[in-house]
Length: 75
Image 1 (cartoon, rainbow, N blue to C red):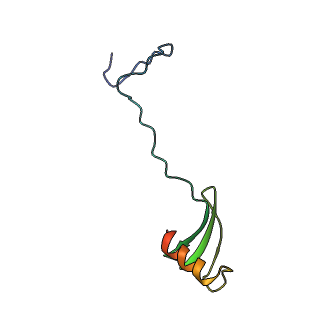
Image 2: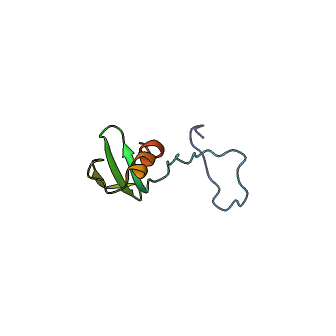
Image 3: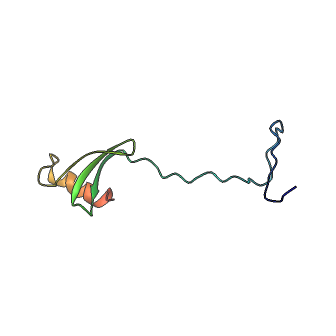
């Protein structure tokens, strides 16, 4: 049998000592408002998808909120 082929026992209830299949690393989905430094805009994400974006001058948040988002939630 070729060494690159792995035969799996579908009825084996024990976990193998080492996993031959690695799970892909998934980054957490973005939710909420973020400040995007490259475009200088506030961007809203819903379940990882870009919902809308707005410039800081048109954003409805107060100055303290804008500064906090720009400092803590920058992408």
